[in-house]
Length: 468
Image 1 (cartoon, rainbow, N blue to C red):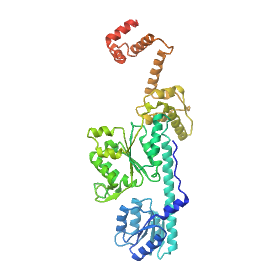
Image 2: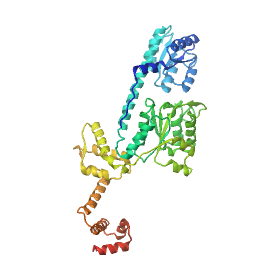
Image 3: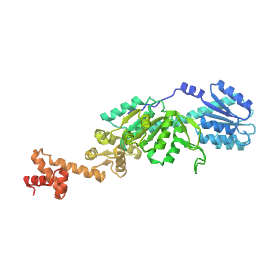
Image 4: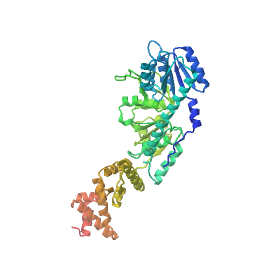
């Protein structure tokens, strides 16, 4: 499955930079007005604040690409406090500090705390504009590098969506059709089938690709921890909440949140999630403030939510909000024709990691194809990783595979030998009966159970074939 990485032109980057949001923090109204006018003329979106406290309140509601702050702001919070706070709540924002009382110590402290630059008053407008341009260019470069790393990581992960079976082609088709949509998606599939990979593919091939993709397993947290993880919390809302925390929905603003095992969410959190979807806003634990968000939700589970709704174990209204589009992933046992491709992909990946080359003997591959894979693709990849780690020759044989796979393969080979010479049905029935009796140690009750017949029928068959 090919993933196209979106590329921005220089013109698009300049246009995006011109629309950047800038927060000016200064207790001098004249400086505020001057910077608002000058930066506004350049096409920037400018918000001003007269104190550190007000600047932090604004930061809870709105994100900025750049903060320009005076260091001396008043009796409580200083520009250094604003710098440290914004580096915590909006780490991708660049910050320029301005002061009329410059010193080497202050400059060093500011840079070490994460300031992009440090200017002294009185400043020249041209110098400020130059530094603003440089700061935004630096921010663009950092974001571009992070985005590229995420895309490359995702592309590597998406390559695990391997398969040419009709079932997988249907999955690819749905991914292509829904990626550009804003609609929520519900993915069904057994554990290990690749539900998160599908969710990432939907995100990465759509208009939200440049924004964040954040995933959470709803079954891995207690109710209170999951609530804090998703919606964030306010300082002092519970023991240990020493600072405000942004939840996943806030962190993924403009992007995608993947809720795995959504069926494990408590009724109370289901209500809160429903409100988040309907209102497109969140409220942190312990806070009365609503925060607007723009997030696409992709949910997944290995339990049928429709059946849970019928049993009263899941909210019907939330179910229909999540299941706008539905994608069903087939288990590996229903697409065994994809196993050779998955094996080739996994061995190539592990060989690249270890600086070697690995192959699989035909008999070993036949054993993998014949195994039912209850853990699906994840189990297959983990098994191959272990086989590669323990292999010294570069060639994986049947003997290198786990006992359960070897045993099933050998049993299958023995069964195939029963009819290798194309016997008649009577002869085949006789051979199979003899095989079952041998495997059970002539345990008549167990043999009858395996054959699906009663003991009297077993006795008649054994007598007819003169096996006793």
